[in-house]
Image 1 (cartoon, each protein chain N blue to C red):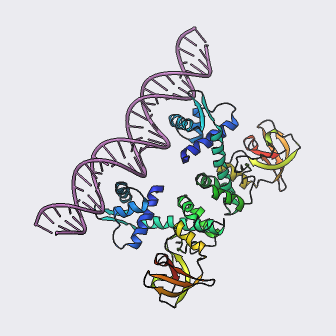
Image 2 (image 1 turned 60 degrees about the vertical axis):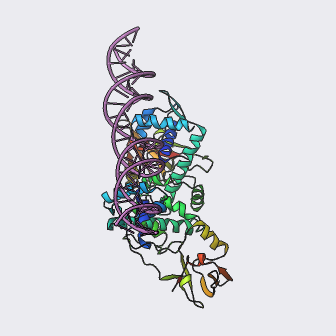
Image 3 (image 1 turned 30 degrees about the vertical axis):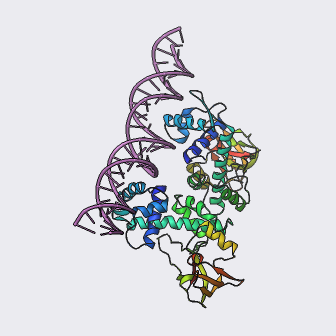
Length: 217
Length: 217
DNA sequence: ATTAAAATTTAGATAAGACTAAAAATATAT
DNA sequence: ATATATTTTTAGTCTTATCTAAATTTTAAT
């Protein structure tokens, strides 16, 4: 049985492994979890003892298969709970992360399976992230950052890379939501901003915003 | 902010205060929480420091108003989650206690208010226990143990005193459910058993069972 | 009113998880 | 290649919540 703290580390390592390619560094984990590098060293030793992670001193960490599956299970719970909060309790998508961070640690296989059914087995959460099934498998919809899409083409807004409250509130304010069709109209080299067009309006977005919006391809 | 452990102690003290009349003893709490008396002493000192409990060495414990309200808030969460599990996720009433014990510690006022609305502001949980509102107020339906009801009279099964898995499974097996109309037909002095009659059948129940079934009066 | 029994508290340890400061290893720059 | 900077680990503390064993207080019994 994993503790709440272990689960948070596994999740962090999983996410870091997915972006960087090689073994995850102590400092990277510390930054992600907002803790000290020395605390990470302690925990990573413990995860290695439990065979949830591979760890070589000074060389970094990677998840074992068991570790990866545990991380996936926590991520599955997190995303199902977020879906519940938005679809059933009418939370807005910028409010649910902190609550789901708590709910994801509730221990009951049966609960999460029943929740999954209650939500009609959703494949993606309110931020467009894929929800793994109970075996840890998922299918990510093919998508590209708006930054990487050529001018003149268009796509459907599938997911957001940054799920921070600030960013989601920005999208709310500017009436951008998942499922919207977005067309790239213009690119301004000076500040790397983009002009995009949706059903309802035309707007300019910064590079910073653009790289966090993913369109179906 | 209260910790998970503090909340469990507050709940235990609340329940013990409600049955016994005077200050709650260290041993009683220890038994309820399944811990050692020395651990209780430690925690009770901490609760007193936080002004959640009144505590006099060797004399026992009682909740302060703040302590009582905190306990009520935890109980409210527990019962709302149980209602959710049974009414929305189709758990049976004997499966929900352990899961609700975890869910009751999730910290979010907004979550519990929205859950309350989602469930249509239920006044009683699946075991017939009253659900306090957000101010800690509730109304208990007037009821009496079957043991204290005279032969020949009848009532509606309102709640069960014992919510243990074993007892609830017994009721399931014998097709007794909250809301059933029950008539007391006979009393056998030898073993203090009772014969009762429901819509569907007549059956004999032990004293032990009878004292845990509460009928509206 | 003593004495025995039961309940309660204290003292001291342990485990998990986190922290600071110092030491050691690795990476970088000239 | 060596000095410097950065990263990582170790050693030692702290906090929370437990526990056992011993000491103390209260209760019950004669």
